[in-house]
Length: 450
Image (cartoon, rainbow, N blue to C red; front, side, top):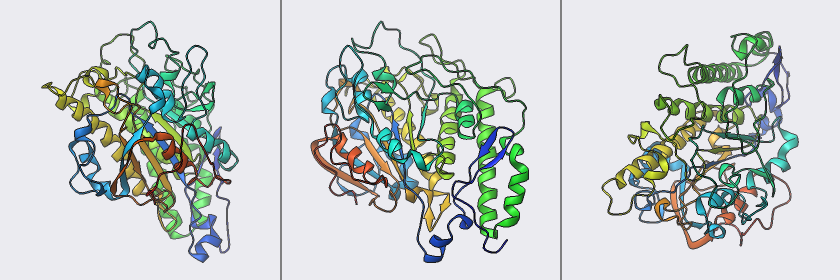
């Protein structure tokens, strides 16, 4: 290691049209390391899984520390000390056409208008705009390929509402990326076409000039970096590079079915049938979650969202043990013999969330882990999907938010507490400068989060 050699937190390894960010290293934070303080920023991610839950298998019976988890939350067992279950939150402004309007209200806390599109700026974009100068990407919006509903309209409202949770202004949704290769290339500075707002078509994957790993393009700078840092930093860099290579391999399995038997090329189906080989939806989801982890690890962005489907989503997830499409499953009533399928599907989606929580907890950062410096919000636009209830939304909040959150418990709020209250509280934990006093329909913050 070169003595007294330091680099900026925003250092990139460059080569042949590629720019690769780095994780937090000791050589980036000399003052913080010497003083025993963490300089790591707080990150925020918001996940929207449509069609609600079966509340009896999602919410713990009692408030307080998480003990035996209800059936839908069992995948959280390894990370329950890092996760908060929050009940009592409501999306009261979106009682009409709830699937289609409540999606737009989920992160905006605003009332979507009929006719001309107008809702409100979303919490993630408020934070992204405040922090844009600190990162290469203000935010990262991700999603899944969607089986399109065969319907003339979205209950009389613009279908833009049901297809977007991120809004940079009251009239401008932020397009999400559903192709993992394009998302990867965006993170590592390759030129990719931007999807159209509300587009139904999945953008084609970009063609690289060669089949080399992105790391092959920056190998010379990577070797020089390793020579100049200490043993712990070399270990962090090697671990990060291996993670990056594994994400590339995962993406290639998803988008190159001719090279990887059993894979599915993620193109939007035009029928109501599940994709031809839907078992690879699982790989698609995990590829997107891995990309989010890399984006946070390298401080490429501090804000991200991911949609697991449009409102009234017709996607199917065979890995859950249920082959029927999501929307139909959500409409079983309490007496249905197939209500168990709804819980299985809820449980599967929670398992995907748990995968990311575990991954972030495994990444060392500063004096703790990357998860310590994250807030991961998981929720749905509806409470119980079958009755289109917008009360008691299923909400999870994982991570420590820069060590400002007291996790590992069920926080029971007063019934009807606006979802916007939680969003307001989260935004004000994101190191954004002057505090935000009001957001959407908020009436204040959330007592008891800390």
